[in-house]
Image 1 (cartoon, one colour):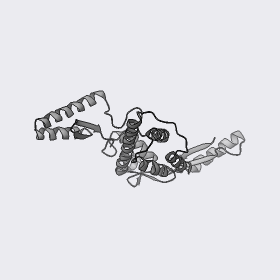
Image 2 (image 1 turned 30 degrees about the vertical axis):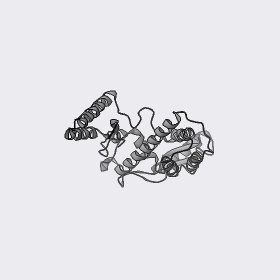
Image 3 (image 1 turned 90 degrees about the vertical axis):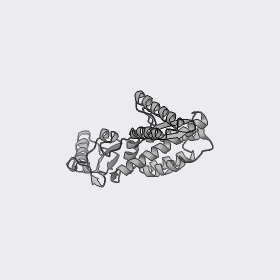
Length: 245
C-alpha cells in the first residue's frame, strides 16, 4: 500500500509485526511506502485517558459535556486538524474558542464573496496566488499551520475578483470542510422549531424597544443569549445568530 497511518505508540511492536507478517505472506520486500505516525492527543496539558477522567467522545464535545460549551462540528474538525500530525496536540477550551473564531471568519468571508458575485464561483488553478500558497504548505509534510496561516489573513481582505476568490475558497474548503459544512451551516439554528421560537423572541424584543420598555427588551435579549445566540439590533430590527462555541 502507499500510506499507512497510526499512533506513535503502535510503531513497536504492532507495525513492525504487521510488516513482518505481510512481507512474509506476500513475498514483497516492503509493505507500505509511507508511514505517518500521529503523536498523542493531550487534554489541557495531560494525556487523554479514562483513568484521568478526561476521555471525551465527539458527541461529548459537540454537546458541551467536555468543556461546558456546545460547538458546531466544523469547529471541532478545525481544532483537530490544525495541529501538525507529528506534534502532540493539546485540546483546550481556549483552542476550541479560537477555532470557532476562525470558522466564523471563513464563513462570513464566504457570505461576502457570494453576495458580491451572486454565488457564481469561477474555476481557478493552483496558479491562483492564495491557492498556490495553501497547496505548497500542505505539500510540505502536511503543514496545516502554514496552510491556515495563508488562508485566515486572506479571509479579512476584499478580493478584486470575488468569483475567482470564491472558486479558490471552494478548492481550499474541499480539504478543510469547515466553511461551511453542507449539512448544517454554522450560523443556522438547528431545527425549524428552534428558529421559529428565536424569531418570535426577536420580534418581541423589537416590540418592547418600540414601546420604550427597555427593561423587557433587555430581559428578552438575555433570554435569547442564554439559548446560545448572539443578538444584533439595527434600524432594520433584531436578528439572532447561533454561536459556534
